[in-house]
Length: 219
Image (cartoon, rainbow, N blue to C red; front, top):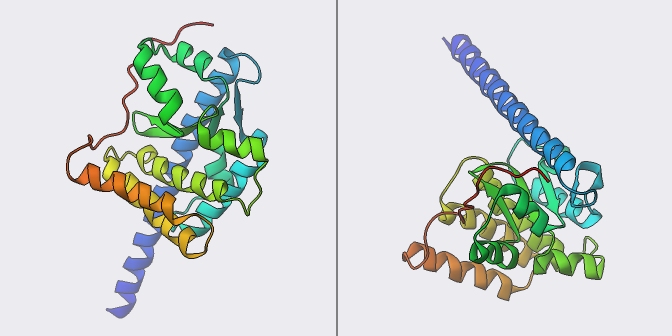
């Protein structure tokens, strides 16, 4: 009986591992298709991806992977990130016409996903990303760890979760580790916890920012 149970457990683990691998493969293919599309449609230099990601982004990804139980390598997660340097051209291409929504995305979103799917888009015009490039942030810079928290947040959405509460809870979990290690200021964590409280109380909608887009235009 013990041998039978052990065999069943081994088979279950193998199936789960195979299933997780297949899901990752589908996600990688989806991200690859989008990257290829954007690279073809947007002006050269509008996006960064893969090996072309800034060193600070790669550091943030490495720190996040180190702290999460996900069976996702640094290379896999990096492959599913796109830095959008020209947000106006990107939003034009995606058909986002509403001026208020465009301003919200550009000013308030450090990163985002579309329809809770990979890839994760990093706003190259956001304050956090601008701080990284202006200071040429190294692995010791708090901005790198804040960005790791942002990527953790959006990874929850990219995996199909629409709840903003669950996404920010994961971001806070990562940030708490960094605060204990004196890598991120306590004030930054406190601000994120304050937003979580607003979400829980229903003062903010428990969903990611919706991007109302029309059919992509041909640039």
